[in-house]
Every structure is written in C-alpha cells, then in structure tokens.
Image (cartoon, rainbow, N blue to C red; front, side, top):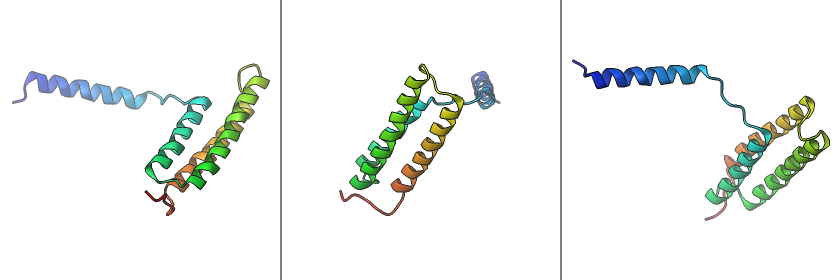
Length: 111
C-alpha cells in the first residue's frame, strides 16, 4: 500500500525527531544573548512596536549590561566567575522581559 520511499522517509523523520528531542539545547553565551536582545530592540523600533523613547530607555539599559559584561571579563582574565555570570543572566532575563512588555504594550510609534 505504501511505497518504500514513503516508509523510509517516515522512518528517517521519526528518527530525526527522536534524536533532536533528546539532545540538550545549546545554551547561548552572554555575548550572544546581548546581541540577540539588541536586535530585538532594533526590530521593535523598525516594526513600530517600540516608541523612540522606549527604545532609548532599553538601549541605555542594554549598554549598561554590555559594559558590565566586558568589564567583568577583563577583571577576571577573559572569563566570568559563576557569581558574575548568575548576576549577568539575571539582569539579561529582566531586560528580556522588559523588552517583551514594551513591545506588547499599547504604545505604538506612528507610521
């Protein structure tokens, strides 16, 4: 009833899905998160979801996080201590949530 291509294709798809669900997700480095959050702010301005004032506020907060990241790396020989990594991740989590809230509030930039 089913062709060999269909059966083989289904088996490959099932194996791929099973394998991908068992592999752990690759954690983003702090630098990758900083870049990604910056891009989210820029995209929010471009789409009109963020006003210029909101974007300025987020860029300033983002710049403080970025400065802290590079300063702490320089202080500890190119790496972050576990405590500094935890503090930085907490700040980035807060910043990410704030970007989301600002992009989804009722304030829109006129187009």
